[in-house]
Length: 447
Ligand SMILES: O=C(O)C1=C[C@@H](OP(=O)(O)O)[C@@H](O)[C@H](O)C1
Ligand SMILES: C=C(OP(=O)(O)O)C(=O)O
Image (cartoon, helix red, strand yellow):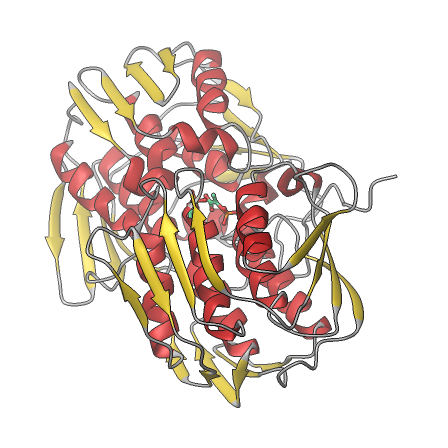
């Protein structure tokens, strides 16, 4: 019998009990501002690093969503304390080697927690942690990370299916050294090895056997390790990384807004001939989805880049006849794929084969969804060619995938009769997503 759960719903989820919703097209273009919630990627890194730091960190602007809730609950069960108000959270770190001797944790559907935590847990002596998840996360790729941790002396055991969650992780007194690992399935494996590295007993050298997908997420990791007092030595081609032993030190840190979430609002402006100003955006951020600003500009949107904001204004007609390699910012492949249906010529998206192993098989899920709406979409192993055409109304599955739901919702702001099933799956990273659309004047019927 499986100990994994079906649902990642948490006290921070929204739309409890809402089975579906119907969006109504925008009647008139608008000019509005939005403030985007905190970044999932930055929040979960900050929670984990703070939980393994000496002292108490204060984190402001953290994200409240399913992924961050289960990360926090897991760290609390491991001994970290979290005291929070609406904007700040104070995290007091776990004493070295003071993990519970045996503990079971549930991490929801968060790829970040699944890949960032096992290594760190393996640095602590005398403990056995059982990591369980949703069924969705259990079957995503993990084994490459676990094999690398085994090379470094961590004991990882599969409790049900080989290569899947749940796992048990046992700490050891002899850890660290050299490890070779592939980065072409998930950048999160590299981030997880890096975050654990300073806490191993020996200095750690990581050698990459391939390029890294979405490598900017590794930059975010290195940056945040720096902020918590640890330096990483990286070769210019990212193939060699060295980390000396050290202890993370508590910090006071404002956390960045989620640029992946921001993209849906930028896309909305581009699509509806509207103007949306996104406030409190770090335009020097490492978050790779910032590249969408340039993609929208290529598609004809007007962009104003301010010191800490961006304004996107949509054109009368989005441009197509483009081929876009989205390997570096693949969380947004679905967003651009959706916008492509409204362009003036076909758009080909390449480089995103690895998103077949995200929350769902995102490549085939978009093919299925757009085909259902009558759009011509040719699926490739690493993306699609999407040819704009007349779009029908329809009831669309969201595949328990927040990005499928948020991307397909954009179609409903242009086309009558788009209904999304299980809209609360947006709670993985943005529980307030549909409320934010409503605040921009979009009418939504909840059923
Ligand atoms: O490190 C991170 O915070 C993330 C890395 C990426 O995952 P992969 O590298 O597994 O594609 C990205 O898709 C995910 O949303 C967040
Ligand atoms: C792939 C994603 O999530 P995760 O952090 O679970 O990998 C995502 O948010 O698009």
